[in-house]
Length: 380
Image 1 (cartoon, rainbow, N blue to C red):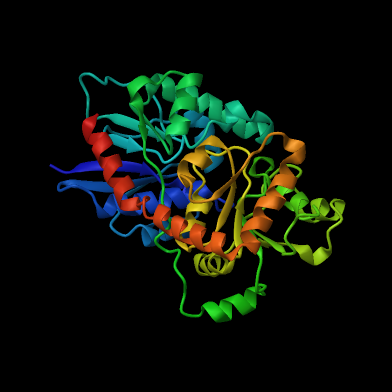
Image 2 (cartoon, helix red, strand yellow):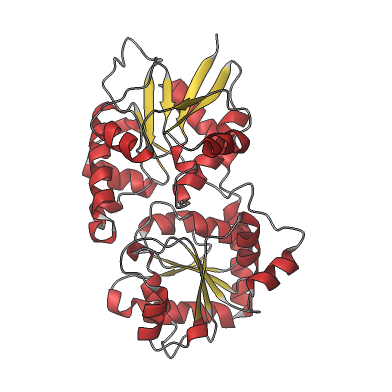
């Protein structure tokens, strides 16, 4: 008899592209690759354009089936928030985020029917002012449903596990399973050509992340105006988020020249790899995180990293980067400026951070993460 693990893959095709989508794609691909004998992986997606269905089949070779909801993403999220629209049939469901059909089921007498969700961070509780209010409300509501109905909850770090259990006690249902660098994030053969097309400077500071308040980009931009700052331009990769983070406006208010900060927007993997590889310093100033995958990506290219002292970030970095204290917020830009300048000007320090980062990146593997997910479902 074949056992099917149904994975909610909706975030892969949602717009704008997100870190959760990237996580979902990589994890699902590896779940297919390492599926135990007699096991297979199927997908679950909201009502989407036909090209999105085709894209999922292309990105996830070996996926045996794709359940297509009659509800669009917005409606499906709302429906699952209120425990409506159950999936047909029974079996195992794994969601790489909180979007899942969480309903009551008989855990004791029907162990084969199980739902596992993923909570990537606790920002909705610890830093609610940095989130879109609608997103915060949905996250809290789905976490409550997970507390009532989920058979297990995956979190990316021990930090999040501890924080989450302080908020609502999941007991032994929490499992720590982290992410890793994308298998597609490798240097292309035409790296030089891409670097010229991207107009990459010889030396620069790089930051990657959605443009939203909790990512600390305002403090990073302000740090460039400090007298101790390195005389380097800042390049920012990532889709535009929400809120009041306007890169040009923040840079102008800080008195920076127009060419000092450049927003690159969303980059395909090949361009991102080139940009990460050539950066002088990678800055990850996020105020609150659950994991910090962009930092691991920078480590994998041997790029020196300066990061915040957010607890989960410190856990993931494990001493491979330079940590900067976030408190107090008013002097955070100054500390960022000094740390970045120290790395940019000290060749010996940069070299040491390079090898520490390369070594740290090896600790994370999508294959290992997928095997742990399969084991989790087997344990249930």
